[in-house]
Structure formats: structure tokens, C-alpha cells
Image 1 (tube, rainbow, N blue to C red):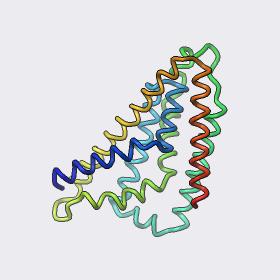
Image 2: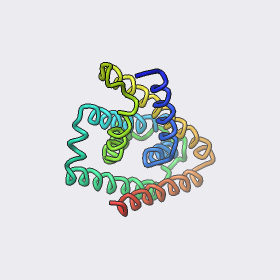
Image 3: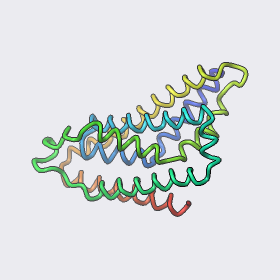
Length: 203
């Protein structure tokens, strides 16, 4: 893998991460509800799920999953249902009594991590992306494991930076008070549901 290939990978991955999708909406929703510091747990869950798909695509298991239409669709529909549930939960969630400051930090990190991980693992499109995307930046004449490790670390770092940036953008809305937080979460919830319905319509 040349430096030019790595730079191209970083640029392409950054652009793709910036485009809002289910993961971004989840992070924004959790940042509004629990603060940007707690949203880091959701980000780590998303990265763990993305890394798992990365590893599957790199080991060739991804090709087997893609070849199994029933398994692929089962994962996809599971992800759609979970996405819809997250959207409804975000829409219906109300600020806790006592205001934003009291609610801040009350969510358990493990629960937020699990939400991010399940969301990402329920999106087999990530696997399709890696299977089609990774070979473009690999040198077939060089050892693959070191190249894959570098790309995996770069992908995780970019994902974290972009997602945390979105979480920080939610902080000003959070400071405006419970009413603005509620409307922000409802907006994120509607968008999550819309994404889920759009994915279902394409299935």
C-alpha cells in the first residue's frame, strides 16, 4: 500500500463518515439525552461493530455472508427493526425530572455501547461497503495483514473523530434547556424512523 493509496483511503472514509446516517443520528440523540461525554460509549459501540464487519470482510467470511441471501436479509431486517425501535425511543424519550444537569451522566455506558454496537452490526451495508471498498487500496504484492491493520486503525480513528464532532455539535442545543432537547430528540427520532422505512422499502 502506497502513501497515495492510504491518503485516498483516509479522504474517502472521512467524507463517507461525515454524511449523516443511522450512526450519526444515534450519536446525536444520545448526546442530546445524556451529554457528549456519555455519547462516547455509543461511538465506541459503533466503532466496535464497524471493526467487526471490517474483520469479517478482510477474512473472507464476508463473502460467504453475502453469498447467503437469507442470512444477509435476516441481518438486514433485524437492523431495520432495531433502527425503527431506536427512532421511536428517541421520539418518545422525555428529559428526566430535575432538568438537564441532573439527567447528565445517568445512562449506563454499557447500555449505550450495546446500542451503538447492535445498530452497526444490524447494518450489513457496512459489510458490502468494506468488501467492495478495501481492495481498491491494498497492494496484492505486499503482506495483507499489516495493511489491513493500518486501514482498520485509520478507519476507527476517523469514525471516532467525526462522530464525536457530531456529539459536540449537540451540546449547544442541550444547554438551551429540556424543550429544545425534546425537539432535537424528536427530530433525530423521526429521521431514524424515516431511514428505517427507506431501508425497508428498498429490501
